[in-house]
Image 1: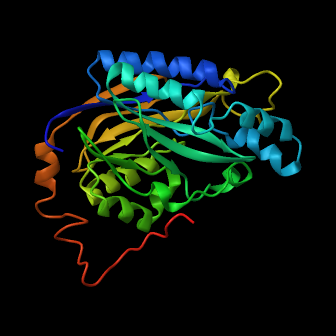
Image 2 (image 1 turned 135 degrees about the vertical axis):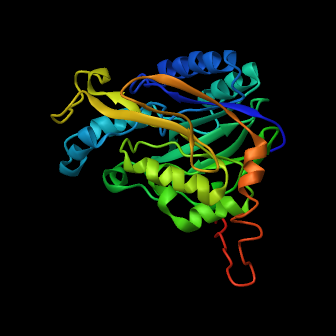
Length: 296
């Protein structure tokens, strides 16, 4: 990372179970971010077409809402497809790096995936969440190691992990060894304690961390989708952009839609690595070694 970079977290609500409507909202939000000078825009975990909140997924255990899973699958993204072409076109139109969380349909299995598009519109990274958490295991299959890497962009090296797989030390280490500068952490964790984690990751990786969190309301779901009793907010957000020293550059943003924008200073990136570089002078490769299993 050699030059200052302006980035954005788009904490916006999808058009639930409507991939076309959600992609239209993505295009409008990305245009807004680009108009503010953003060169990279991150959307939340499984933004297209919705994060499967435990308030409706819990009924899957009783077998009562298979039709809702089917609706999610029908409106999910295949790779490649017209949907990925549309996302790539947004990246190319604005000349931005576009990172989007999607429900990815492959055969008859859904995966929680992070897709990253280059400014020329090419899909340059697809990472599937390694380990779904709790109720998510009734929705998604297990990811693999094929996306545990960073990609070189004009902005610096970019990569990411999704929600609680950020708690897997070796998954983080794989990104560190790949030379990460801008660390993407889309999530559905809307707790205060999540921020302890992303601030630690920023300090551990000595990179800039973008955590874009799910914002969803029960009232935004179709009337025929059963939502368990509780507040209207299914996901209250909490998106933030964190510097390599663990300090906030933007956010957290709670309980509303919004666009967080921050400028990343490369001098801060290098200054923080003077004392600690997780994949460099502090890594002790003569003692410790990480091997990522290749995709079979």
